[in-house]
Image: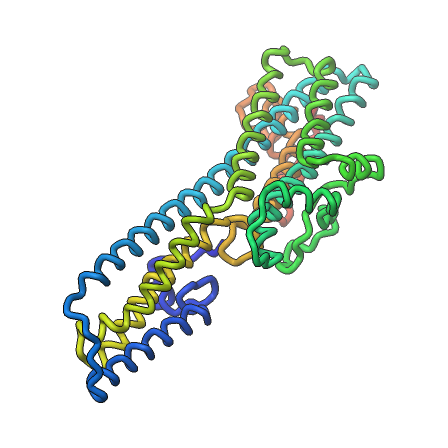
Length: 402
C-alpha cells in the first residue's frame, strides 16, 4: 500500500511506482491503438479507401456499454478493497481489546495475590503464554490472508480456471507450510526487505506437530488462547460476567478475520470479467476507425485514440488491482505491517515499567500524603522521563511503595 500527498499534482502525474498508466503493457497498448489510428487516417485520406461508415451510433452504443461495465467493476473492486481494510482494522482492534483486558485483569489479580506464590506463578505463566500465542495467531492470520486462493492463482499464473475444491485438494496435498518466523528481539526493524513475521517465541516441536496436523492453523491457535483464558478464570479476581467480555471480543475478532478471508478467497465473477475483456478488445479495435472519421486530422486522431484507450484500459487495470487487496504487490494492503504494529502493542501493554506505574497509587494524581517529589522520583527510578539526561529532580529519601 502506497501513501502519497494528493496535493502534489506534478509529482502525482509523473510517479511510476504502483501506477497502471505508466506500465509497459498499458503504454504499449495505447501506442498500438494510436498507430492504428494513424494508419486508418493514411488509408482513408491518402489511399482514398472508403471505410463506408455513415454514422457513429454503433461505436457510441458499444462505448456506453463498455464504460458502464468498467465503472461498475471498479466500484465493486473499491468496495472489496475498503471492506478488506475495514475488517483488518476491526479484527486487530478486537484482539488488542482481548489482550489488554486480560492484562488488566491479571495485574489486578496479581496485586491481591502477593502472598500466594503458586497462584502468582500460574497467572504470570498465562500472561507469557497468551502474549506468545496472540503474536503467533496474528502471524498465521496474516500469512493466511497473504496466501489466499486469489493470490495463489496469481502467483502460479494458472492458465485455466479452477474450482475451490481443486484448490483445497492441492493445498491439502502440500501440507502445512510454515511461515517465515523471527523472534522479536532478533529482527532488524530498519530492514525493509525482511518479510519474516515477528513473534515472541518460536513454536515448540509439539505445537508444530499440532499445526501440521490441523487443517486450519489460525483456528487451532485461537483454541489455545480460549483454553488459556478459561483455565485462568479461577485465578482472576474479576467477576465471571466481566471476564466473558473477552470471549465476545475474540468472537468478534474472528468474525472480522473470516470476512477478510472471504475477500482473499472469493474472486470477481469470471463471466463478468471475461465478457468485459471481450467488449474492451472489440472497442479498442473499432475505436481508431470511428475516431478518424470524427476528427479527420492526422495529428489529433492518434492522440485521441491513445488517451481514449488508456482511460478505459487503465480503469479496468485499477479494478483488477483493487479486487485482490491481499498479496505482495505494491498496491496491496501491507498485512505484515499490521502484524508488526500489533506485536508492538502487545509489547507495550505487557511492559514491566507500565505495570509498575499502574501499581503506584498516586502517580499522575495529587496525593497529599506523599512526599512532594515522590511521583517525579518514581519516574526517575523507572526511567520514564523523556529527557535522556540526568533529571533535575532530586530523589527523596522517602521509600516508594510500588
